[in-house]
Length: 420
Image (cartoon, rainbow, N blue to C red):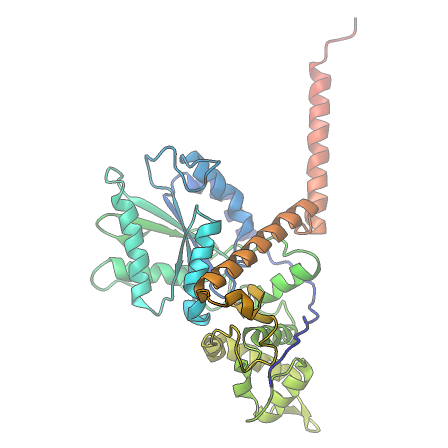
């Protein structure tokens, strides 16, 4: 039995997690970019839009303009005397369905011509080789430069340190020691690393930076969903979210990805049907796994912890094998619109008449472009309405504004001519 209606779960308001080392790096970024030639921005393939770090966007755009890129045409460079490239690496490609990789790359190129997009997994040497070759080719374009300096940025726990260790092993022949510590928990890197040599000829160096979270995840349903998504990929410090809320959203998303045969069915007894009821799901899971409290009461919290951990390990790989379900005849609503999704950020409605006689990849690219446009519009609306600014930040802004007005008023008084 397939699901034809999947209601959005009730989610808690997002917590604030923006330690001092994140603020420190955000403030030093503009000065750091003056000696940066390539920005490698890492994002999580499951959250290619949510893991965009809007906190750093202003500094990156200013850096591009100062290096000669056309402010009216993001794909045109007016002055090209030194390297200035932004490469977006979508890590953990093995955790999203393969059929969406190429359409999403094309959609990103269409909407963000100032960025090069590359999917990668640190388990695939070919991906590391492709990225290493990309950096070497950029360096070779500027033979008079002494070296190429790369800055790696991104949200917490997207794999920045792991990437640099892999690039170092690929670019330097012979045994190379692991240069940077890595962890499955966010926040291990808290300061800018010393320069790490990635290639000898041409010389390529890189800096590893602390993962920077958004100072405030936003108000309302959008902010709540953004926080839960980042918590699910372990981008937010463990313990800041109730695990049952994470499990509820995870059940919703797995149903969206495959309403006919969601990945979690392998955890349930044979013959189980998909469900939208999180309590029913956790109870069934707890009973099957023998997770019971005193009096044979199913332990729903333990089941929720197990469910989230399962997804972060083999469950994520299993859900990524989901087939493309465009006009799937097994779906009861195949004659009408079908809800489909890719990763946890992209979701659309598609009808059989939209794809009749058309290349499926082109249709998917169009749907993904629409998702990107909607995301950008939501971000711009949030900035305009200040829904992405916390009450504490708003108070600080008002205090700073008041101080600036007083300073101007005082300066006018001190320069005014004395009365006759």
